Length: 512
Figure (tube, rainbow, N blue to C red):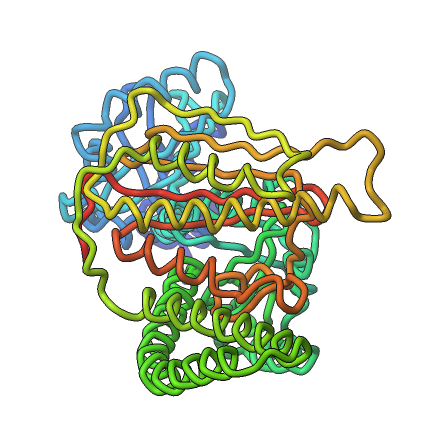
C-alpha cells in the first residue's frame, strides 16, 4: 500500500497560503496622514496641511507646481517658501488664531517662489481638530491679477478724479454716473445735482440735431468722437470746450458706457474774439485816416463857399438853409476829427495824471447840460489814488463820453411813458485801487442795454440813439484811448435797470 502521508499534513499543505509582499498598515481614522495627496488633490486650488507650529506637512500637486521651492518630497517644510520671512509673523498669528478659536481665518500676503515677493495670495486657514495631531487646511488663491486690476482701477480713478480737465462718465443710455471736481467747477453744478441726468442740461442750443446724431452714430459704432461744443454754466454763462468721447467696452465687446474728457477753451475763444476785434479796429483806423484826408479837403471847400454865399445874399430863406448846411458841415467835421483822433498815435504829451481831478472836471462839464438837471451825481473817489503816466485831455474825454451816454440813458428812462413811479435818476462814479490797477466805475440807473447789443457797443458808428443825437463814435474812440495805455474797459448792463462801465489802468502803464 502506497504511503500518502499524514492526512493533517496534507490538509495543511493544501491550505497553506502563497507567499506575498507585506501590506502597508492602514492609517487610523483620525491620523493626519489620511489627508495626504489624494485628498488634497481634490481641491482646485493649491492646498496644504499646516500644524500649529506653522510647519507644512503635505501639499497637493497644484501647491508643488505653484511653489516649486517646496518641491515634491520636500515636505515637511517652512511656510517661508510661500510667504517669505517678512510675513511669517503675520501667518503664525493667523494660524494660532484659527486653532484657538476653531474658526476659519483669512489673510492676504505678498509672496513668490523666486524671492521677489511680487505676487499676491489670499490664504484661507481652516482648522481640522478631528485629526491627530490637529492640523489646519491651508488653501492658497493667487490673486495677483485681480490685485493688478484693482490697482489699475485705482490709478485710473485717481487720475480721473484729480485731473485738471473736466471728466464725465455716462451709462449706455447717456445718463451721468460720474463727474470729477474739475467738471463741477467748470459747469457750476455739484455732482449730486447732475448724477443720473442727461448731459443735455448743459446744452446751449447752438448745435442742431444733425450735430448730435453724428456724435451718437460715431460712439455707438465703438469709435472715439472729438469736437468743439458750446455749453452753459449753471448761471447761464456760455463756455466752450474741446470734447473727446470714448465708448467703454467690456470683455464681451459690448458698450457699457461712455467716457468724456473736456478741455476748456473759453479763454482761448475770448482771446480770439479780442484779436478779431483788435484787427477790425486797426483796419477801421486805417480807413479813418483815408476818409479824413479824402473828405476833409472837399469839406473845407464847401464850408468856404457857404460863407461866401452868406455874405452875398440877404434872403432869409437862403440864409436859413445855409445855416443848416453849416451845421451839417460842423457835424461831419466833428466825426472826421474823432476818426482822426482814434486812427493816429496821439501827439499829446504823457504826464503824471491825477485821475480823480479828471473825473471831477468831466462830471462838472456834463452836469451843466439840460438833460442833467434831474439827475443826481454821486462821486466816491479814493483819496489815495496814485497818479499815472497818461494824457490828461484824452482820459478826460473818455470820462466825458461815458458820462454823456449815461446822462442820455437816465434822461430817457425818466421821460419814458412807462417810467417806474418814484424812480430817481442817479449816476455814480467810483475810483479805487485793486489787483495792482486803478479801477474807475461809472454806473447809471438808465434804460440799460439789450443783451443783443452788448457785443456791438464799441464798434464805430453803432449807436442806439435817435438819428442826429449821436455819431456812434464816442465809445469807439474811448476804447482806443484806453487800449493805447494798456488799459481795459468792460460793461455790464441789465435792460431797464442801468449800466456800469469799468475802466482799468495798470499801475505804471506805458504807451503802445
